Image 1 (cartoon, rainbow, N blue to C red):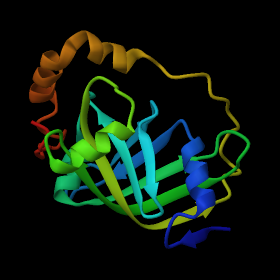
Image 2 (image 1 turned 60 degrees about the vertical axis):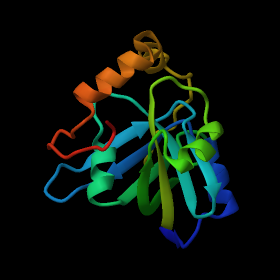
Image 3 (image 1 turned 90 degrees about the horizontal axis):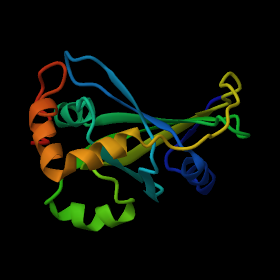
Image 4 (image 1 turned 45 degrees about the vertical axis):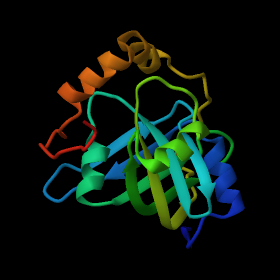
Length: 179
């Protein structure tokens, strides 16, 4: 049975902190709905109404573009280990870019992953749990080093060039604001 919350409880915050994987969904008018998996120790629970994650440079930048057009976002956490639980967190998202005042305060909360392009902050409006009994039981085997090694090899200048070429617009042509 689904249960709704107006804020994240201490139990829900503890559940979120244990997860190695989470999903972010966003949508802009007349654009494709985007659903992205995230990992690499990139998520922080700031308080019972605020989540933030370090967004790393990748092949697209749909979340950045969507949040500029419509700040609605959903995060989903699945209990793949012992906890059979699904948690959806609903709220408003905002991208914080390097050089913006909030960047300096938030960036030290995250590991020094190369290729960081923004920090996405979500103001939580509500949360919903459901049983998760249909989610498979799976174990954590470790992080992939592929993305961070790729970014490290490119270096800061190479990453900036990549973002100019590949991350300036979404797949639907919306501006991302990342360059």
